[in-house]
Length: 244
Figure 1 (tube, rainbow, N blue to C red):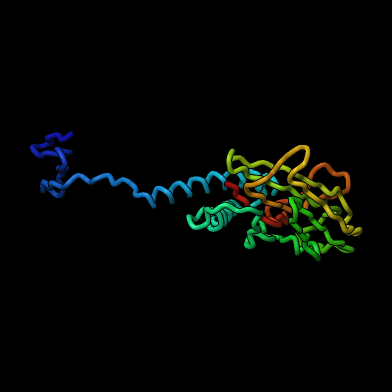
Figure 2 (figure 1 turned 60 degrees about the vertical axis):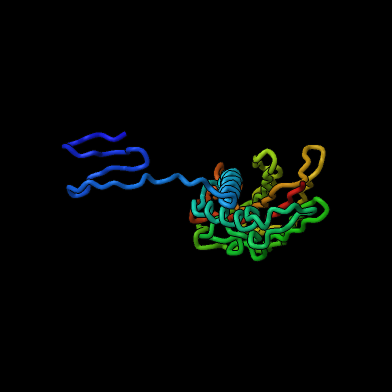
């Protein structure tokens, strides 16, 4: 609504706006509100779905990484999800799980990498609804300069599942190896995660397999000594399946 101030009209009158600039009265057309077109609506919807998925899985990845990670990783996963799942040309359904190549061995905390400590990274096989993780034998553990005071370590594995229909992420499988002295190394071990069993039935959605190393000052100390500088964690693999 327009008002008169010092003999000059200011404000909206009909489809025009009256204002005073450097003592001069100016009349301008009122800006129109543009309704988003169909393509823009689709893009906005995909972005919203992507942001919701990323927020759900990032919360669990952050928890797995002991909250010792750079927040920028959230933007990295957001971009990865958008490229692979939330572009209009990639909305088709899939009959089988599809591996996301760029997410293989993706470091969550990049200050000290898993390969800086272990001489061989875990190997992954995904076949017939079963994920197998092979931990190679490590006769010796590389002692990074930041591992001063570390006497033992353990590895942890978590599988995160994002349910498309419920729009909800949760950890469905976990493994903790138990502590091993650095001088003893690690023996070869195979772990298996069944997607369908008596407890659960995972038939589609997004799967993220995380692997991390935890460090301790002794075999019976209460807390790990990981930090933002020393926290080797990574996504070993990511798979996507969308059924009709």
